[in-house]
Length: 349
Ligand code: ADP
Ligand code: MG
Image (cartoon, rainbow, N blue to C red; front, side, top):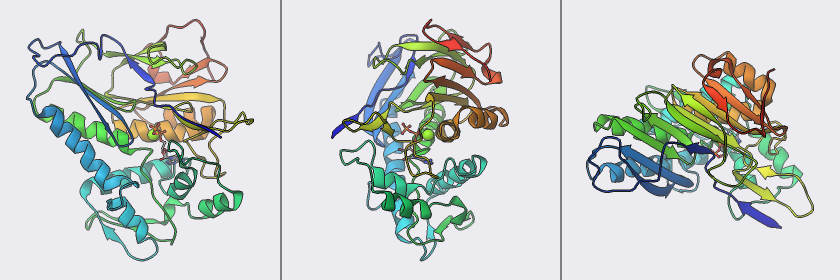
């Protein structure tokens, strides 16, 4: 069995991002980047112009705090406490954990369960992205599917309590927490007087301020068919602060003699990694948490249903890159997305 983990960052930031490293940033356009490994991914924070020395450490602390509360890999996390008490009693959590769960429920509802925050038992069966990834037995998948239903989650905002009504239910915020973390760091940098920054939590990107020319940021959408981090197929003029991509080539399991790519976006109805003709979905919106949620749900829904969800939601836009190398963009991005590779073609539904 050949297991492979790829942590490519799907979005390529243009305009010199990451090329300049300096501790004495005096010119406001000079970027300084620091990198941390946390929440299961690589986090790059780039600040333009002057900054206080502690700003990067404090930013990474914010993300570590989110991880300590919400990771299923940390025994003492609030999420594990909620899960351990499924079917037993409600658990009071911090406001940040509550906010993420509440927003995950929104994404579960609007996607009619394509994104389901209670898919945790499936996620832990597959363990895609870890050394332990393997194809689970069919009976185990069927049992896991039985535990999935976001409607069995009870929330009380006044007491910040969360209750999973059915025993065996497991909630997992892996499909949304990186986006939340990027938003929180973005807010923090802004509160510290930073005017321009890029927070990149494993490809979930929050953009603070304007692009280099005072206009929109120019963000390259990676060509999913190459392994090079720098090959992009087109450029988005990002007029909204967040851009997030879900792709099948990010974390997956390969089995010898089997052409299927067992990746990390799971269909809660079948129990298996979603098999469709999408290579990657990029979402642009006002909140990185929402872009993260939609990138996962729209991927599960597929091109037609996913595009419908995007078009019916205000201020949420999408770019679909298909196996056929056709690229579909939602109506709000027409004129803001430019195809730069001649290997791809624009298409319309
Ligand atoms: P990435 O980690 O590459 O940013 P996504 O944001 O697309 O990926 O989310 C994938 C993660 O979301 C998985 O690793 C898993 O934790 C969780 N997940 C997978 N399938 C679903 C689903 N159908 N609904 C909710 N969460 C999911
Ligand atoms: Mg996501």
